[in-house]
Length: 104
Image (cartoon, rainbow, N blue to C red; front, side, top):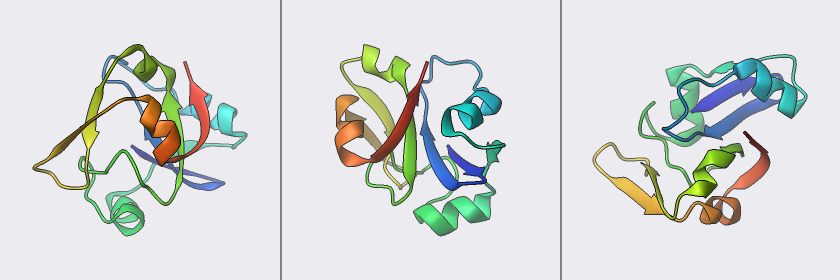
């Protein structure tokens, strides 16, 4: 997901096991007054991909990562192309992204 905050756009990498994400909690973690989903146009402009196909690594925006992902040996997610999925060790997210926070 890409969120729009008063600090700019932020990538949110979330476990599929999570049924709900509290944008208020994410805003608190980031020290922002609010956080909401970025528009499809904003997502495409900053990532080069359509909503639903955003890559998990190598983004040019800061990232927040769900700690639930670190319970798995591998995770699956976007590559920037709708026809491909990336399999990656979750620890690599810290190495390949600008991680500014994690959350439970």
